[in-house]
Every structure is written in C-alpha cells, then in structure tokens.
Amino acid sequence: MKRILIILAVLALSWPGAAQFKLSDKDLANVLYVMGQMYPEGFTLDLNTMRQPTEGLMVSYKETQNSFDAKSIRKVIQHARAHQNLVGGWLNEETGQYYFDSTRKFPEDSLAAALAFARENGQHTVYVTSKGINVKSNYEQEDIRIILDCDMGSSTDDLFALMMLYRYMDMKRCTLLGVVVDRMGRANADAVDVMNNYYGYPDIPIGLERDGVKDPHVYIPYHNMAYARSTEGVPLFKRTVGDKGEYLDGYKLYRKLLAAQPDKSVTIASIGFVTSLARLLQSGPDEYSPLSGRELVQRKVKAIYAMGGVFGDSFEHDYNFTAAIDYSLKFFELWPEDIDIVFSPGEVGDPLYYSAAQIIKDMDWTSAHPIKWIYEFLTEDKFQKMWDPLAVINAVEGDDIIYKLSPRGRVKLTPTGETIFTEDPNGNARYQYPGPEGWSDYVLQYIRLLSIQH
Image (cartoon, rainbow, N blue to C red; front, side, top):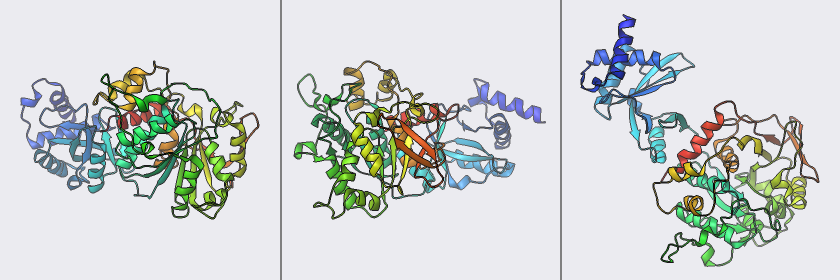
C-alpha cells in the first residue's frame, strides 16, 4: 500500500496533466501524507497546479494548527480550498510529528504584512520560498531603541546596515533614534539624509563628526550621491534634515538622544570609527544633561554592538580602531565595564559578498534608488562584503539567535590597533564566531530579502 501511495504522489507532482487530474480529498490527503516523508525539510503545494511554488512568503493559518493525522489533513484540504488552495507541511523535530497547514501566500516584497499576519495567527516563522529561509515572527515585542554610529561615504555596507534598520522599523522590530556619521564632511551626513527620506523616515536626527579621522581611505567614493541629478538637472533624491541647518556634532547628538531615553534602554550599533563615542565619553555636562558623558552612557546604554576587532590566533590591526588610534584607545579606556560590548570581526563578514549585478537586479522594482544609483553610476564591482549589517542584525535579533558568540571576556586595544581578548566569565565582551557551512548564504539571503522590500 505504501508503495502505491508513493507512486500516486510522484505522479501527482510530476505528470504534466496532474492539474487536470482531479483527486478526491481522500487521495489528496494520502498524497500529502507521503509528501511529508519525501520532504522532511518541509514543502508547500498548490492544489490548483499540483506544483510547489517557487516564490512567495508562506504563512500558515491558525485554524489548521496541530493537524498531523489523516482526519485533520482532510480539514486542512477543505480550508485550503476555501482560501488560496495552498497546503504546507513541516516536521516538528521536537515531537517527531509532521504537521500540515492551510497556507496563505504573500508577495516576497511584502514581508512586513506577512510577519503581521503570522503574529496574528500565532505562527513562529514566515517561509521565504525563493530563498529557502525562514524569518522569525514570534519574537517578543521588545522596546529596542538603537543609535547607529557609521562611517558613511566609503564602503557601501554602511548603506545596507542602515537599510536594514529601516526595514526592521517597518516590521516593528526597533526604533532608530538617530544616526551619527563618524566620517568628516557634510556630504556624508547628507547621504544619510537621503536614505532617511527615501525609506520613509525623514525626521530621524543626524549627527556629524567634525574632529575625526583625517583623510581616511575611501573605498567607494559615493559621498556625492546626495546631490545626484537627472539629465534635466532635477535632484533625484530628497533631503530634509540637512537643508534646515547645520548638523549637531556627533557626540552632541549622542548626549541629546541619550538624555531623553529611559535608563538602560539604548543599544548602540557602531559600524565605523569610534571617534564620536570617545568624544562622548570624555564630554562634560551641558544643556542636555548634568551628567558627564561616561555617566550618561553608564545610565542610559544597555549594550553596544561594534563592527571591528580581530580575534582568535591572528594578531592583526583592526582598520576601524586603527584609523584614529588615539580616540580608539580612549574609547576602550573609558567604556564602562558593566555595559556589554559584542564585536563583529571582519572574518565573520568576509564570505558575505553581495555582487553589484545582484544588487541592481534585486532593486529593479524602481528606477531611482540611492543604493542602486551608486552601483550603476559611481563604482565598479569592488567585491563589497557585507560586514556592517552583521552588527545591526545582532543588535536587533539578539544574542545567540543567528550568531554563535564567544565566551565572556575582556578586550584590550594595543597602541598598534590589535584587539586582545582574554576570557573572563565576569567580562563584558564577546565576539561573533564565523558561522557553520551554509550560514553565510542564509544571512546574505536575509539581507537580499530586505533589499527587495518596497
């Protein structure tokens, strides 16, 4: 009997005329049961075509939860026929049971809507068909308040880190309090202003470092993106904050934002130099707070996620910390020992290559996109790695969710820019380990998924 069911399932899925071959609900239930054995990692079946869809965001309905026996599979089929004619299956490895669900399909550029539906229906994940990944939806609605500290205007991974924060806000995952640009030059802050406007968050405040790294290396010269014009001379991208006046100094914006937040509520994602942070830690009382900078950080900040550091057996200089070594040494000296710091080393992001051709293709839903425009007109493909988004993902998703972290310890920065990690169960520092096989592809697919949202 089992052999007959397998043949029936294979015929239903492979025969060109299967869609016209009407199966009874009983036979279809048998086909689905066998598919559960054929696809232990899960499947989705379109009952109209008897094919597995190749794209779409798949979310199960709550009405068909806990369906794993023959009787309940028929109820799943009936519900699916009354809705989108989609049935999904997945193996619960904890119980060893294979569950079947009536499924709703969303376009892949509608992640926020799919996640909202998943939460309404008590579903843990949204499955992204074309990329073969699950996006978690059952996170606790934490009040994650983030300040992004970046060195916008050189490597494009800063742009993708910022893009991801906008998309996380779309999904109600966090609040971006402000952006500190730790690379001197107004154009770099104007680029952030363009991004804020393009992604629908025009009022996010921006701070600019004015006493930072002198003439740092520029890998991809896109800082003038903010002033792009059409062939008719019309500005391509809107700005608001920068056009109203001068930007606050980076450390001043830190003080203003931190002073207004509840105690221990702010997460900092630092994906560039730490000049503004060092100046913040050295600052004194001002119009925003009677506290010193270090006291303000100690009271308001709960953690910092920093893109930087070289760990393991290698003793190498870290670029972000070496570029302005005096400020970096001051940062490490003054950062409070009771506030966690999680490092994202360069080697973790090295495998995450997002090609220019793929970026342009993923953003083909629009003709005028600031990131797409940079790749079309300002740079050849310089094999940009997605280092910076890793700190942002960690800051929002939480520890030990997507990454495996080192044991706790303490990190010392040498005068030549080496980061020395010493294990200590009472230490405040950890760092990300490179992921296992397949991990880098998963993370890159996640970044790409957020790139196509609009």
